[in-house]
Amino acid sequence: MKQSPSQNFDVRADGQNPSYIILHYTGTKTAEEAEARFCNDNPQDQIGRIAPHYMIDGVGQWIKFIEEDKRAWHAGKAQWKDITDMNSASIGIEIWNSGHEFDCEDFLPKQIDSLVELIENIRTRWNIPNANILGHSDIAPGRKIDPGEKFPWRKLEIYGVGLMPDMGDPSSEAEAMVSAPESFYQALRDYGYTYTDDQTVLLREFRRHFLPKLLDNQELDLETCAAILSLARQAA
Image 1: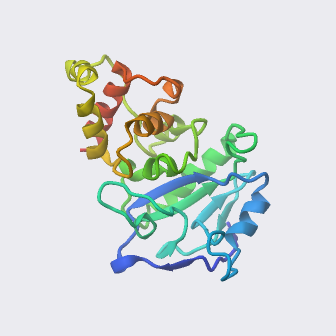
Image 2: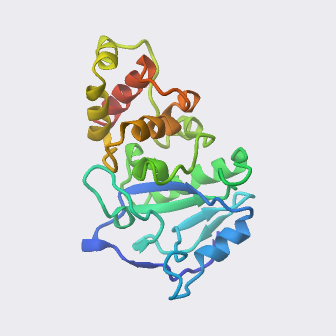
């Protein structure tokens, strides 16, 4: 692990411990560019002063910027359930990827293997359940879209990291939900999607994480309803 200390942090509110892990992509052409940005501590550059706790570069190396017990500035304006200060509640991990602004290339297998190992390492110190491993787009839908629809959430789940829906035969409850869309959006709110009430945004960003093959579908469908019901059961 490479140490690259950043000053872009402060104290977690109310002395809380991290209970979430938030995943991001860097959205930069190179990992070196991202590292330099995360170490920018110019007091006049308030917008540019951001940093995660860790970054995984293009060869799978861990780069540590901030101690885990500190509040890193990675989430920005965000909300999950009733938590509006996600920086205080979480550990932020950036994975180098050029993002939607550039090539948005596939994540490399060595990056994902390294990420799984890092999350397992973090969870030896903090109680972070699988339901609390989220993307930036989950906690700030409509404002952020990273780590993006190419991020292999299903591979993480295979290794025991994060939750993904169990897509068996749809239940009668899922069928009823298609006919009563408000019950779907209430289920999203109950699961944690409380940042916005914009249903178009919520549907798209839920799918970006859990059903990327349906990302461009603008209609609520049976598979999407079955997915949120499956996740709710697993998180209960």
